[in-house]
Length: 262
Image (tube, rainbow, N blue to C red; front, side):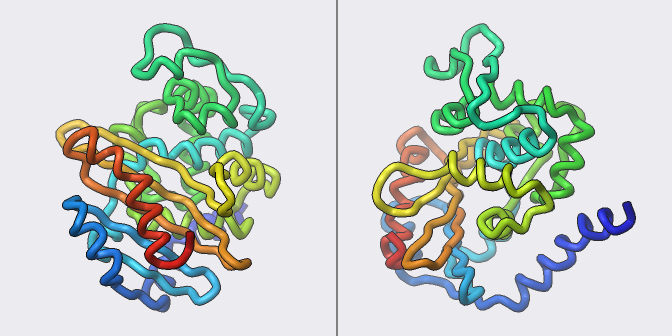
């Protein structure tokens, strides 16, 4: 037990050291891209082989925001690791009733639910996990501020859970390298359902959060494999309207293209 606790506490100390040791570079190409689009945003890419970060707006990259639906990655990992779901193809109920998006109004597996970002299905998964196991899972993942509050099915949408773009890449670094304190089978399954369509080896998840009293925040996080090398990334931006929200993925892909990764 003492060894497990030590392992769970280690990442928080280790991450601070990593931030100091790694090379950081502000990218003029990325800055020009976001300036041209007129959005307040950050975009960070971690080259795992060289342990170097390329970033637009480092200060914002280290500022925490609600993770919104990017938390579906962690939610899936915690659910699978605790045996709450047997596998990513087990069908889960959406709960009935009206939904904000019509495609959410049906029972789905995690494989299908993550593709359409089905909030009701993942809220149901969180209720099955419960607060105690969810808190333990967040500690094991060293995920952001690791705070759930008292409501198990909204804390990633409304707070108090918060994570920075840089912390997203640290979390994804461990996921892609099988270094999370979770069963390897769970990590492999979640990696598989994040694969995006197309010829590039691209894995990603969007997010759109509207915390009470705060501005809407948009996310696009994931990783890309290029010529055998891995690069994790995270984008977040202030959403002022639907048109700005729709820019998340195109801007992220444009950023990866500017860096020669897509």
